[in-house]
Length: 251
Figure: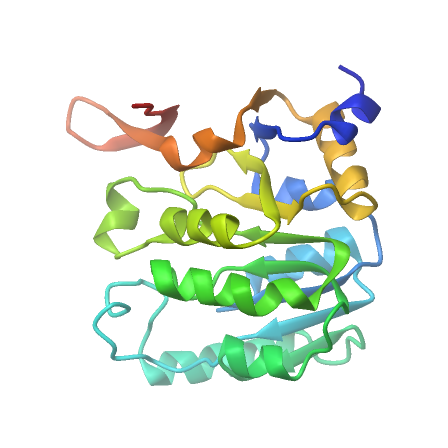
């Protein structure tokens, strides 16, 4: 299959063996981007280096949350640690004109961004079903018609269940409610997903064409299979997890 034919394919999801950092290399340069959930800014730095965005909105409240459905998330660190993260991110990206730091919850920051102004939104904040759904619903209108919604942790293995993650359900519900479809799911244990409006071209077509032509493998699957993703634990003789093997449970 040529890259052009892959990019034009409608109603397909591509399951790829490509790290989330390397997925960024498949995007056009100079996009207007937003990252929801910044933490220490490590993935923000990858976006800057690989996409060279015209704008990068970094959105995070950097505050500890005591709510019951979030206390198990390892990124929900104490307020002193959150303050340290905020100061470190501010210092790390100081003097970079493309970067705009928003110390705010996702919904608050969304209200200050014009509709149709972004090419890429990356969602990696609170991971519960309701929080993921709310973030996707809030930021979908901020995208240009051919813009992409990315997110992290589309997984349901033991580690994500222990932290109370509901990303798979939240994304699935968003797709049911919106005009978006899932284009890409990668094979990492904490999987990255890519969504786009049905029938859009432009950024979507450029990204998908390059990805399918460069990925180590790209398997074309019906998008309905995405919620069936499951990662089996592969352990050694001492019971230590060596890897999570992706598979799909149907029926």
